[in-house]
Length: 245
Ligand SMILES: Cc1cc2nc3c(=O)[nH]c(=O)nc-3n(C[C@H](O)[C@H](O)[C@H](O)COP(=O)(O)O)c2cc1C
Image 1: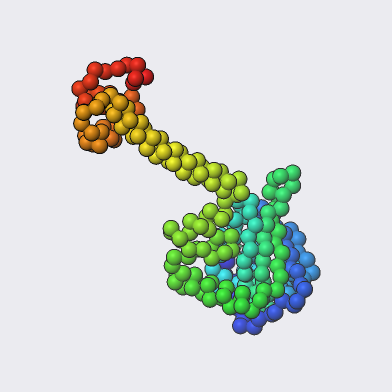
Image 2 (image 1 turned 90 degrees about the horizontal axis):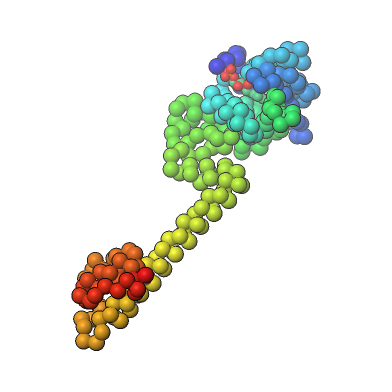
């Protein structure tokens, strides 16, 4: 973890309409910077090109923020978040960064970051959050693609939201299929139960015991043919293969 020093408490506000751009190779080595990057950071192009991007790292930025950035980019996804950077002279500037992989022929060949002016409310929130993370007081939350998310069971809705559309459709179809299968199973059991009672009634004949007094094991018998069989056994009637099949 690089610790760029010294730092001052003097902030440079990113001017409205400014777009600070840099590009890196797969290892985070700077391959391009635009003029706005040079203006706000105070570095020259020569001082930045070919250098690791942590050259502008501010010590107030928590390690977890960059771990999240790199994990996201390596997964081929884009990352959005607030970053506090250090100017060459130790001053600092806050940016709203959008970083993304750069692809050629479908292959990731490097990364690009486009930064704009953040709102003061965003800066205040990020300042507070990064302080809590640095001090180890950010329990129960984590950074994911630059967003703050809860950990544990409360993270499930966030994880679902992160799934691709195809994966979400697949999950929805599976849940619906399971619900339909359960409904069909209960409907079938109900029909079976009625069939069994009717069948037993038919075979009991007049004057036999009432079908409502079925022993419980008959009622819970799963397969139709077995129910009838047990029904015969109970009523002591001869077994009729024709009826069972
Ligand atoms: C496209 C891209 C842009 C980056 N921009 C910044 C940046 O503006 N400031 C910064 O501190 N780190 C930036 N990083 C992250 C750095 O590569 C590095 O992970 C970070 O400074 C922490 O470095 P350290 O762990 O060596 O201290 C960027 C990385 C990539 C891939």
